[in-house]
Image 1 (cartoon, one colour):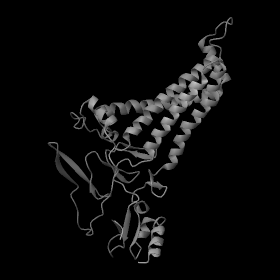
Image 2 (cartoon, rainbow, N blue to C red):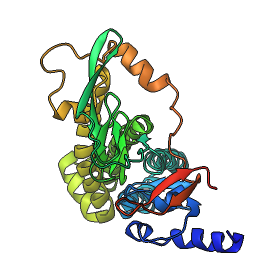
Image 3 (cartoon, helix red, strand yellow):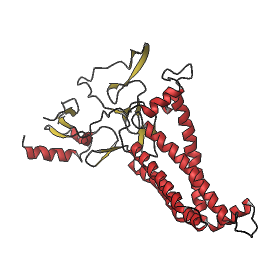
Image 4 (spheres, rainbow, N blue to C red):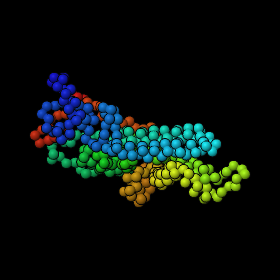
Length: 333
């Protein structure tokens, strides 16, 4: 085949819908992310992999950055006027915000542990058992067959209906990061959740302190001090932007705090959200727990397994048979 024609066909595959591939008459080579069967989004020529909802990340970033910016402009400025070390407060706040953004992107912009699909059988009459049992560590584990991915799912793996992928140690699909939470990003999800909850407490305390200062709770002598309630009301009237930041942080803490406690309990017994929602482990001792301390040691210290997804791999798209579908084969020509 002419190399120029081959390159042109590969470029067309980057924008062609998957159903059009079944209508191609000649084989062509393209990158795997061009014909990715799941609902993931790829950027930077396939080097960045995200879930199907990258727009939801913008909402989460706004929830992080807008209150943080308002805190700098209103609360920190008020504290500086009252003689507080505003430079130290601003530096610590900026460091926390950067850490939260780092954990957010490590959670959202990654492969959560997708198990690649396998090509289906050419003979449509071949039907595999819906499940099969295998012996692992001296006990029988049931592996269920995924008809979408054409694989027997490993233990603790589930198919995400949003991303349309089987994900190893699937926990849940998080709309706030627009991605699945699985084996490869659960650690960073916990870091993001815990850090967000602590940051909400941090901002709330400084916001309350600034309102009390502005309301005259601790006036310079010889002025008499006022009650904390009067000072809080007066400070709220003087600092409406700080009040809005406080309310947002309290609402955020209600969500992130509850989520942090919930996942801390799950991590202590090495259980996922999906397993908890299915009621697994309720009938007796949970099979995957190794004790609270060992569960946390494994979560915090075990290395992240390598990704099984290769978006930049060259695949050959083979024309469909009269009764079949187009299929991809690794390795190009």
